[in-house]
Length: 485
Image (cartoon, rainbow, N blue to C red; front, side, top):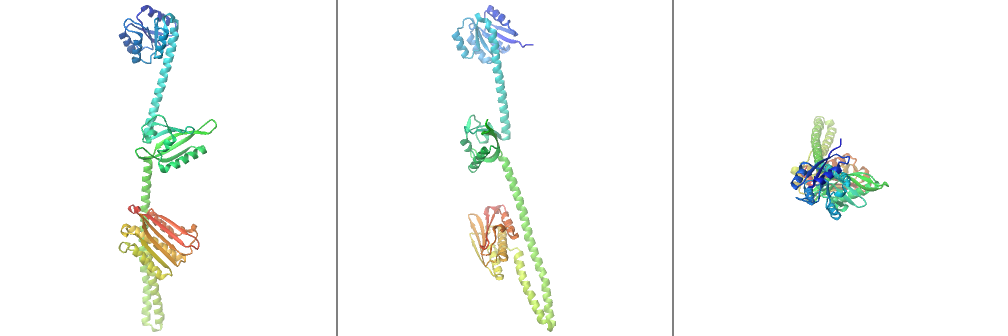
């Protein structure tokens, strides 16, 4: 069953109304008519009857066709409007059509009216369909914009040939701008990239273009109000008919919160690792102290044997000389071992003695027993600001490295320099020994122990050595690490 076409006829002459209705009834369409003779009925019909099309005379006793058209513009602008008149001229009709009137039909040519109505309705329906599609597209874009806003993710398109880029509303917001229409140049887009990341992003883009390969990259941008954000760009290349890259499109997401969370987790992991390292070092120092005490106690057994030899010497004149000689040798060995073990294993009291004095005592004790000259220089160091942990670890590093020099380097001279320069503690230990290849610089247990201590304070370790050219250990520790130690 065909839908009825509602026709509003504005006409004061009943004969003309009958002629129009008669003509329309000749078509295959089904029409429902509403006839009005004055302005008030016309306005009411527009609101209540809701016509599909309006047919209006040009002149009325009470009001005129142009007025009817103006009312239609206000009340039902999408409804087709056709003048049906015998007084309107060709030139005037063309002017009215230019101003928005759908069409006109002369009363002496009513046979053309059905065709004009059908055409007007088709054009009207096409316009309505277009409006509907545009509205649906607008709604879809609005929903997409909302989704992007919630996800902090925008989209972009870049044309390699024109060098211009299109941003979605959320992409503008991510860059700290109000959403706007139009295209942005590459230079404008690049101006938002953090200066330190700018060159890397451009090189990455150029490499992806040359390799015809999709890519993703995280970098920083700086908004106009000087807020730094981390963004993640996931881009895919667009190719032309000859398979050449002509542009790219993709999404850009604000991942600042995610990056900050990752940094927080990394800091927590670093703090946890530091706690573990601190616990290991503390346990190691405690263990060394306990071992030192134990060795010290065990040496008492040797002293006990020494005492027996002395007692035997007192009571047996024949064995006196041999017993005293053995007792003397044991005593000398015990003294030597106690000195070596105690100095190595027992924790130095840096809190009361200070780092400088502990190092000087260490050097004095070692140079008595070993044929080596060690010079020590300290500059700009305020031991009160170092803290006991750093002082103890610096002492252990010196102790470890000097022992390495004595045991392995065959050096005759060594130097120790401890300085504070611009908030950075630098410890430089060098010798004139045999040295070794760089590949072996970090393989020893002692060196690994030194590096572990330095890592705990977020410092760096640098080793310079070559066969026959001595050995140099450089340790740097930033003063700000003490707040986290």
